[in-house]
Length: 89
Image (tube, rainbow, N blue to C red):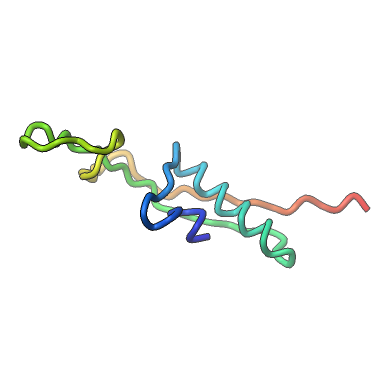
């Protein structure tokens, strides 16, 4: 789950949405653990906006930002439940 969540330590892995990340983490568990029938994952939904470093005379090296400012809205808890499909045998 950690590898799916964060990706390689040197580059990470981008995620378009918390829901996507939750789904991919649950999918990885179901693929690797045949004995798991279902999984529920909960994650905080906290937004962080990238800070434009050019205002401080610094370059923005990464297009998605390097320094982020957490904001208080919107926020909440997002959950995903994945269930292994029944065998058709």
